[in-house]
Amino acid sequence: MEFDNTLKGDTNYNNYEGVCEGIVKNYGEEKAKHKDFCMKLVRNLGCYNLNTKYYNPNNDRCIILYNWIHNTKKNYIHSDEIITKCFNDYIEFMDRTIGNYMCSYDSYNAIYEDPIKMTILDIFNNNMQNIKRKLMEEREKGKFSAQNFVCGSVNIYRKMYRNYCNDQNARDKEHKNTCDQLNALRTIYNSYIFQNVDLKNKIPALDDREEEFWDKCKSDEKLPEKAVVAGPEEPTLQHSYRDEGESTPQAMPYEVDNVEKQVNPTSSTVSTAVGTVAGASSILALLYKVNKEFHLNV
Image 1 (cartoon, rainbow, N blue to C red):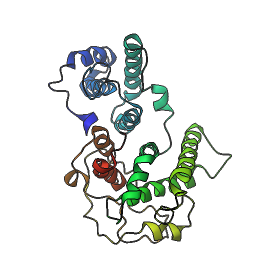
Image 2 (cartoon, helix red, strand yellow):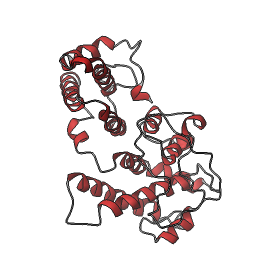
Image 3 (cartoon, rainbow, N blue to C red):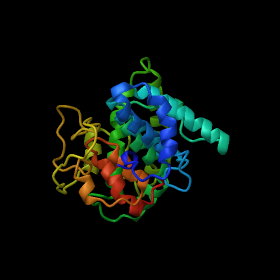
């Protein structure tokens, strides 16, 4: 995955080391391990990487960076201190040089419930125009079709909303952020895509009954065998999106499949999104594969 790429041969290695040596110097036997994490975080924040893909990341890339941090920090006992100090260095540097910055530790701390699922929905939300265009052009539904991408994203939305937004009286900060974002997605999806008369019978409503949803989103295609994708062992999307006790069609278009061997990346941000998911879900695989045709804004 891109954010885990080796630092060997990086021309800015000394800059990263200069930031991190002071942070990890008192970590004893843990120093070398934590220094590698620290230097990768400094590299990924991009303030020392002029004229490279890491420099001054956009909002979508920041969101994916937060998820890389979320998945990686559990391996380091001093990760919170490292993250705080690296973000402080990044913000100070960017304020001093160009006067603004995109990623912030406050944003990282305010991240949503199920942040990787929310990353998918953020990217879905930000690319409604491209997805609508592709839906209008599409004549047949294939495994990697726009229709199946919409089905997978809507399914995530439905489960997230059911889990976090039904109880109006029990919302912590992460619940509120999550529900605010889900409500924003609902407004855009309903007004921009679902109300289109040419698409209403092709894509699911966000509040369809289960039977109606699966009628529009079932697939007769057989998927490749599932495969494990390298990364922390923390599955974030289940094999079946339905609740226990519900039957799921045998071949859903967005179950886990062999991402790394089938897909050639055309967007570094999208490939990073896939890499940050432990046992990457195929909705991310789908996003990864169809980027060439959707021209997603990531």
